[in-house]
Length: 98
Image: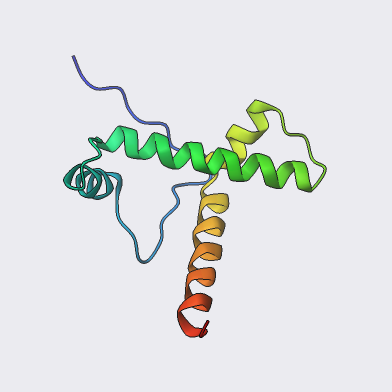
């Protein structure tokens, strides 16, 4: 039996210049004692994205139904925006002295 095809968002996939794929993440986590496969790594990431998306929608006074939160959290543009923001925050802390 053939594997079902994955779902591709109409707006494409999110990619970042520097980063790891789900298999690399799961391998590192497993090596550090947290048994994880690539599907679990993906689910953990999407769960975090849903949390961020829900908080942002609520703070903006927008609809925060589960369907809307899921659509936003899976959006490649949203994921790329979160990745860019986190990268900026990390860069700021690396250059500042505390």
